[in-house]
Image (cartoon, rainbow, N blue to C red; front, side, top):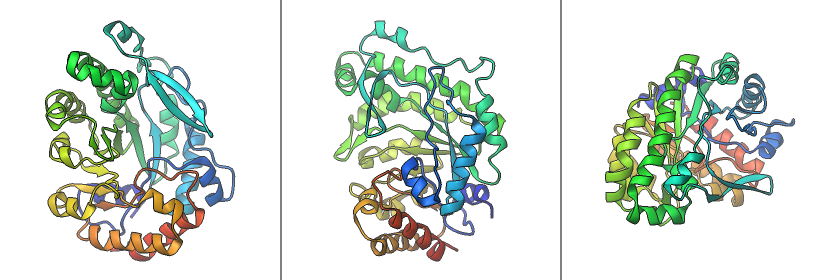
Length: 340
């Protein structure tokens, strides 16, 4: 199977030739060590929302990482902007205080013009060079961007004082994604991967009732409009809202953070109809030995991969502080144990 076929088969909850391997982000410095040449796959975004470098160059760099690791996906950033202060910490962009606190601040939300000449050209270049890899359009359904753009404190006050403000910000993000998604499908992307963090390690950022009444309807409207398979992402313990989250109709959920969620329980309860993505613990990839990583990958494949419906991944992304030898151990373990 090609990488594209492998991922799509897993998302249909069928059995591919081997367990696919996908990652949301691979840090540039880590990728450089693994590939053996300078790699830059995480491009800055210009003010109009387009990447600074060409789509062709981005695809070529990502494919080198995939070939070196046996990874199956290449990713295109199709995020709407976040309206918040940003700082750079050790080369990583960190989102600061949100800027949308009142209705007057809604005027700040000026999204890139999807219909502007050339806006989609870098994405077309990217797809023209994707080969047989699974081309992922990374999007937001809106709630993660809403929390970041409002800031957690303002968002928390608005939950009590003005939930309609939250709905309005969320709706604007959802509407932009609804307009963009058919264009991306037409260009030739294979799947959508929605990144919307809504949970801490201790549990969701709001009550299940608030999620059900305020957040879910607008998120579902966006998810229902997507013409390609969907993976949804949130860090943290999603257990209290998992039943509601799955009403989005997604084909897969990521990353099932192993220090706060038990993937075996999720597999037992939902694994007959939803694909599970992730669960190789980031902290272990940083601190533990290659033998530990090999054992963990083997365990996940043998327990969660049985019957299909599993895509292996880190519990968030591959970061700069991870040991290259642990990523190599992960690669080798997938190749040794991942074939059906």
